[in-house]
Length: 116
Length: 107
Image 1 (cartoon, each protein chain N blue to C red):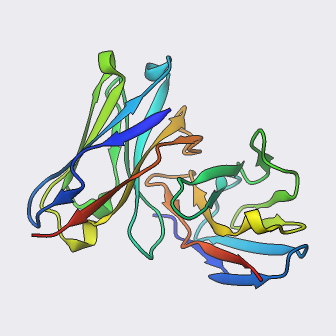
Image 2 (image 1 turned 180 degrees about the vertical axis):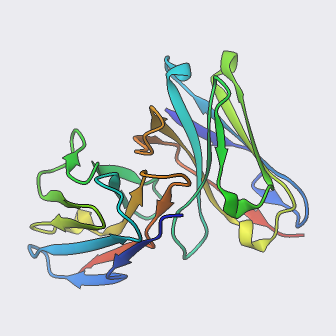
């Protein structure tokens, strides 16, 4: 199981920070991704991380994104800097087997609002 | 990046009918194409991976086909529980990308 957590309200220009907690074993056997869906729009892949240090960010986020992993806690995190209203979305974490891009398990999602 | 053009955007069908959703990639992605179903207020669920491999527990009425640039998701015998948005997604080359989604409504 995957569970997202973090502030649900972020002010414009500040940093969005979310954590995904993963239950079960084999955390180090998978890639882990962040995906978001703005209201009324489609899904956007944000990036992925592996506990061995392999990271890839979607270039569309123009250097604002950072991910990290805490293997002993079976958690991985997302930071998105300088947020605007366009970053308001439901954010999902998902498991990516072998970096295949076929996301087989997802968190329930967390709605993040950007407002002052 | 690979652009996925999904059509139609919306389809309203009677229960028991068939729906066909297409996904066209901007370049050859071989068979690295996956289909998801997302119901309101739920996370997406992987239905089909690698164009035609059904995930465990997915009813046989969901069928994926295609290769190269053209892919299809067919849903036979639609039921009320199939009302959802369906997305295609490619994993041939990073960044992974999604289609815009098809909203399927049951009349």
